[in-house]
Image 1 (spheres, rainbow, N blue to C red):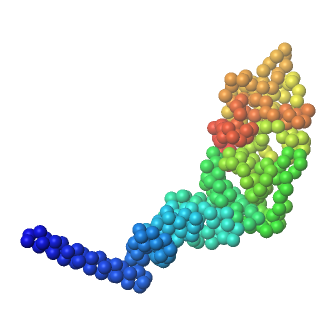
Image 2 (cartoon, one colour):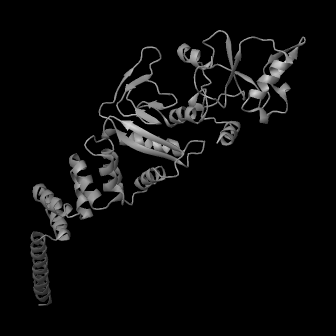
Image 3 (tube, helix red, strand yellow):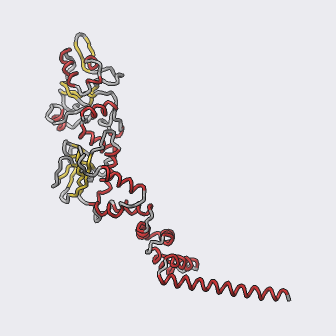
Length: 371
């Protein structure tokens, strides 16, 4: 008797539970059709558990298009082939990580202008995007600019390189606080690689007082007006080339064409780190004193005798190897026979080999005095 009663009670409870589940499913189905994103996601989950992939995909997608993030996550996990689509939905839903992925991809999109890219992502909470907008804000044109630079690209697909340039400017060892950097398109920009030193040589219509040309291939280079960068120009390369603009000359061997101009004084560049003399050994005290007075770094020396050594009644230019500041041979003018270049330190600096990233404190002091 008792066993029969228990069975009856169990069946009644089971019937009530089944009725409740059925009502919940009907309510979820009704809400999903009315457009409730949470109910759509739950209905999709129900179909997925039953291995009904097509209706699961349908309801997840409807929910995701309403920016319901759990549905977006389900689509990303279960249908990864369409990740770009789901990331777009996640970005629109405000997910910072998805916004970073989509925004990074858009930097290389030729069909999205810099203005459009900025307008879309300016309010993103992603830390990387916020740092990029911090760079743009820091170097935007203003009345306080003491150096104005235009980064010139052939199309809008070079936005990432513009941001990389801003980062290199910010991380430069010298003061760039009052620099201003703009992004400009020149549809007529075209570049080739010269045959002599594989430098990128570019033709462009737009011209500015200071311009950075974004070329694809070749070796980066700089003159008094134009800095030409290639796709593989690292931050160290960019800072080396910017070093020319603030007053530093190359300390590696120049090509013969450039050396003919620079080492004979035909090139307008008052270098802070290089002086050039005739390439002979013997000097009089008067000549050494004259060279000493011409040194941009003479205030760092005790006397004119710090830059020469006396042998057999004659003076030979050059300081002892262990001197911290003095006069040391540089390779700058090695391609011409009768000129010798000198620098103030006996170490391999970033102006000789950019990847050392060594900018002596002396160089930075000289730059501050110049400014």
